[in-house]
Length: 446
Image (cartoon, rainbow, N blue to C red; front, side):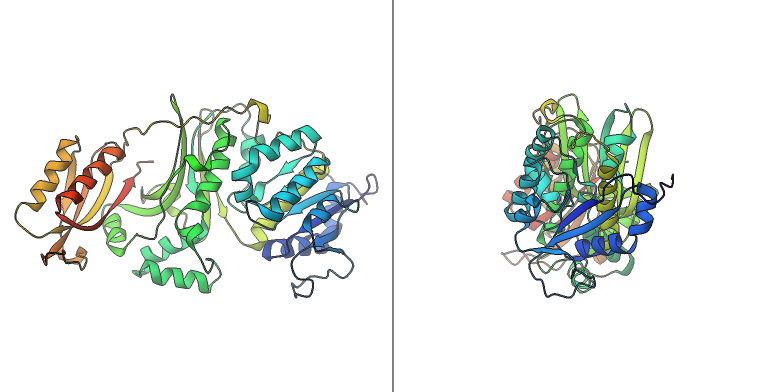
């Protein structure tokens, strides 16, 4: 990159940072430590001049003594002492939304890592930015340190994207990786993830798939040009995954990953988040631990896979800094890829047949005729069973209310509709031949 000397040609870009958690403190540390090098590359000095956070006295490992302090992030966003506002507070409403809105309304550029905020208010904020002439950067909101937003907004030219999918939550990927490698339960993996700081004290948002859904809704808008629609996504998490599922997947040549998948069809956009059997030989199956990956299927470059660290202070702060540098250089692109007025109203595609089939695990009563009745109900809805697995090592401890013993049955279906499978399982449950809730996992051919 060209060296621009001492950076004296432009006035310093004064940055205000709201939120001094792991990411915010790391960002301030990078800007303070690498300021001279960034000035040489940019031709302009980047200076953190003001911050806002809940506690002024907390030790964050950074020097904030010379910075202006704001208790109110909205006041920071409006301050005449900054040129760019960075929101790292979190939350879809409250002070995060109020502060970002306040900055954009006065034409001040904003950088945020807040996927919940964008999933709920992204179109409104993009329109505000366009109307006031401000830039809105959010590279860090999806997949941490992976430059997927920049790729979608600037890097693919005229390529048309047919499908986007990936691993977008490091907590879930860590848990599923440990379960697959170490033969331990979901509950034990979750405890370890919490102890290591990968999972929150209340992990629901991550492990039940909502975090992935927020990120997927943002990617779908950038890929397909429809308004953000997080409430139109079928969401299922990983809390019901057991070692039985992990073991059968491995024996059949698969790994289980929590995927977010969005694709364009002739009838609209299909979005879904769920645990998935993926072939062991696929690129995405090799993305383990807390890593994230996003795959794009396009008409020009076919499949493009972007992988890297999806969370944590340094990777996320690096993505925030990337947006700051773009704004300092004067890079201008519509926040959501196209002007907000050109976004299409979201059109949800109807459920289609699934090429890869389904994995079904259920506890059936060990009585004469039970398995035949289950197969009959499947057949009534046109579901073809590819294989049935019954083994003692897959048996879950369960007893029917009437005292009948049970046995675990695993079925692999051929291509079918998910709605047909779910309707069939509901009827089987009503017949009284199974105990508990069946496990249903898609098998992706990728």
